[in-house]
Each structure stands twice: as C-alpha cells, then as structure tokens.
Amino acid sequence: MDDYKKAADTIREKGYVVAFTGAGISVDSGIPTFRGGQGLWEKYDPMEYAHIGSFSRDPQKVWVMLREMAQVIFDSSPSPAHIALNELEQKGYLKAVITQNVDGLHQIAGNSSVIEYHGNHRRLVCMNCSKKIPFTPEVVGIMPYPNCEKCNSALKPDVVFFGEGIPMLAMVRANEEANKCKVMIIIGTSGVVYPAAEIPYTSKAMGATIIEINPESTPFTSSITDMFFKGSASDILPKILKNI
Ligand code: OAD
Ligand code: ZN
Image (tube, rainbow, N blue to C red; front, side, top):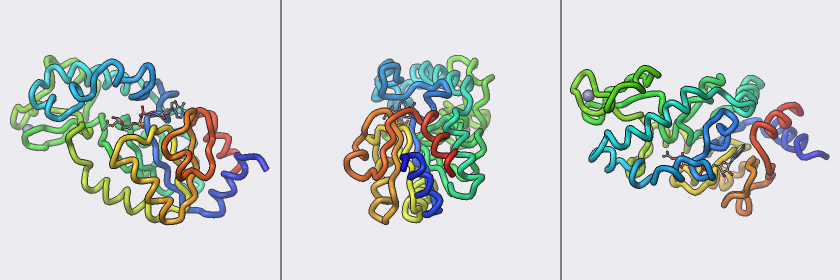
C-alpha cells in the first residue's frame, strides 16, 4: 500500500487528529525558518535580539529585527500545506492545530482551533500595562518603535521571547489536545525548542500514532515517529488529503 494512503487510512480510522507545526510549514508562504541557511537566527543572534532582557534594555535595537520580521509576515499568504490542514478540519478529522509559528497563517487559512504556543506577531502588547492591539502594516513605519497610547511604554509583538514563559491558556489547551488526540501530525519543526517539543512525546505516551513531515529527520524521527514523510509539507500534505 502506498504511504500516503496508509497515512490517510490511519487518520480516517483513528479520527481525532491534532497538528503540531513549526516554521517549515510556512517556508512556501515566503517565511524562512529560524535555523536554516537563510534563517533569522543566522542574521540575528537570538540571545541578543529575541531575549526579553534585550528588549527591555534596548527596544529600538530589537525593533530593527521585528520590523523586518513583520514585513515578511505581512507579505506572506497560506501555503498549500496550510490549506490542506483547513481541509482536514472541514472533513471533521483535525480538531486543533498547536503551532509554534507566530505568523497567523493557520487562522488565515481558516482553521478554527489554533493554539498559539509562542504567541502571534500580528498583535502588539504593552510591556507596562499589557494592553493588546492589532499589529497592522502601518505600525511598521513608526520610528523608532511604537508606544502604548495608554501609558506610552514600548509595544512589543505579542510573541514569546527567550526568557519569557508560555502563555498559560495556550499551555493548558495544548496539553489537553496532546492528551486527547489519536493521531498527531508533526510538520516542519526541528523539535529542539522546549517546552514546545515536549508536546509530541505526551501524545505518543498516551497512545497516539505519530506522522511526521520534514525534509530532514529530527529528534522525533527515530524516537517516536511512526510514519515519516521526508519532504516539503506543501507537497506531502495535499497528497495525504487526496486519499481521505
Ligand atoms: P526551525 O527553524 O528550528 O526548524 C524548521 C524545520 O522545518 C526544520 O526541521 C526544517 O528541516 C523544516 N523544514 C524546512 N523546509 C520545510 C518544508 N518545506 N516543509 C516542511 N518542513 C520544512 O523552526 P521551529 O522548529 O519552528 O521560537 O522553531 C521552534 C521555535 O524556535 C520557534 O517557534 C521560535 C524559534 O526560536 C520563538 O520564537 C519563541
Ligand atoms: Zn500601556
């Protein structure tokens, strides 16, 4: 039996599917990964630019990177892989997407239950009073960086920086879904950033079948993955969908 059909059969038979996604699913949306050759962390040292301490010390410096990232996100649109995940929800199998991505593309593709484990770059939060507002393209042009209209403190994209905790509700919901699912599809993540990377291990321990899609193998591949599809998410997910 071909592997796409086998994965599709597993999804149909087991029913409750959760996707766990990382930067790789957005490559074909025009957003480079963090750790690849073109990756953001090649250009900007994350400890210097994506640590909450750096932001508090020098928001102007960190906003140089944030502006660049925002522009890339505003210019992006859902990939065939995002669209396939929306179809999988429409067909009644996909119950939630747990994403480490901050690009908002799962929501734009139409998925209704998206758990933003690392926040969302399309929202801004005030470092002082926690007020949240949408991050619109017009904000990118505000120099040296946008301030809160209520208390005038620096605004920061509502994403999890190094040194910050995971949003409590996202953590609770992700654990719930990781425990419940019968199939977890891991897509485009290197699996090296914790606590996010714990999620698939939880699902496996609870008896879920693990399907993984990635051009490279990861720490999950040899430890918990049951079906590994080596390649691009935009190529492979639609092929699995065709068999459902
Ligand atoms: P990484 O950049 O660490 O890994 C991206 C993964 O995508 C790699 O395993 C690639 O092999 C894979 N990949 C590349 N192209 C692909 C394609 N076309 N289809 C499928 N997979 C592909 O990104 P993440 O694992 O998402 O955290 O990184 C996790 C976290 O580290 C991010 O959420 C971010 C970063 O620091 C925060 O911002 C808090
Ligand atoms: Zn404020």
